[in-house]
Amino acid sequence: MAFEAVQKNLEDRGFSVKVFAAGREAADYLDSVLDGTSVGIGGSVSVQQLGLYDRLASHNQVFWHWANGPEELPKAMTAEAYLTSVNGLAETGELLNIDGNGNRVASMLYGHRRVFFLVGKNKLAPTYDEALWRARNVAAPKNAQRLGKKTPCAAKADRCYDCKSPDRICRGLAVLWQCMSTAEMEVLLVDEELGY
Image 1 (spheres, rainbow, N blue to C red):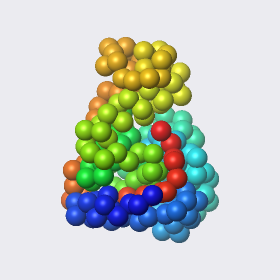
Image 2: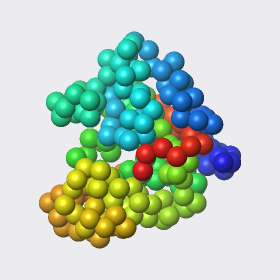
Image 3: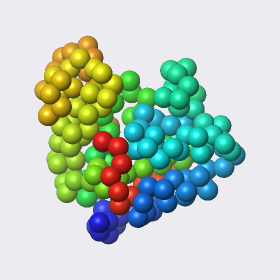
Image 4: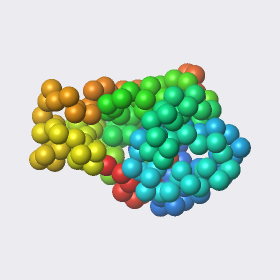
């Protein structure tokens, strides 16, 4: 996949960008640049698929609620580096995440020295509106289904119903129009499908 346009648009918005042919190459890169530091990980199937928790935990202090329970959430939010993915990335350069607890969207906005976004080619959409559509109608239903939530989108896995269910996981949306001024932010574009 040609990532030239999205790479240029992200760089114009202040993000550092690296492009990888395969997820294992991105995992090798993260394993090499994150050493002897504290790392927080947001809920991310992409991170899970690449086995990054075990790799990074061998030489870093890593906090991930998927591996060690909900008590890791506040520790992950104060780590020096943060690793997550996105639900949608517009070719025009906007990064979008939907969240139920708020930990992931909060951490992508503030509190870390470095933030890394691991993004498979399946997350890319031509425009902001299409990236938002993808986040709501592709990623959110798949995540609700994975989590066993009792929502219309999990039951049918076809689209967002903008439900009022107490199990709703799409409670907040964060959009990065530009790199936040308080952190180094790096987008790792991977020419493979990763996560939802």
